Length: 120
Image 1 (tube, helix red, strand yellow):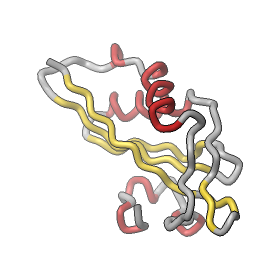
Image 2 (cartoon, helix red, strand yellow; image 1 turned 90 degrees about the horizontal axis):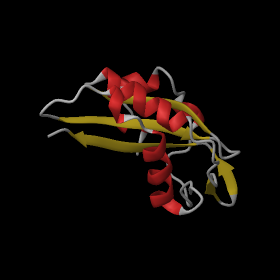
Image 3 (cartoon, helix red, strand yellow; image 1 turned 60 degrees about the vertical axis):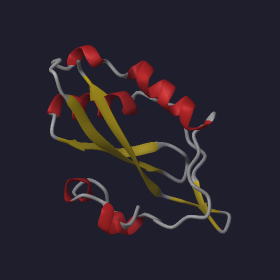
């Protein structure tokens, strides 16, 4: 992810000048990405979405702070209900990340998680 990859909607919420985009060690969720996805799906309430014969998509952007907390969560997609629920589900995960590092110094780093849901 580079500053140019960050959508304007996200830049309104996240000060990209305070982020490190090129890191030597990516932020890590305890148990890895599969554990993160599991916690996210446990917190996500799909019943809030209106089912249709469509695939709903959003991309969630969030900052992993130097203390490992998740901050500045924003979902960017065409479906407002999906965006809101994705943001809420991610905010409800209280487990901290191991923060990103550059030369053994912890840094703020932005992550992006695409999400799609198929209703058929």
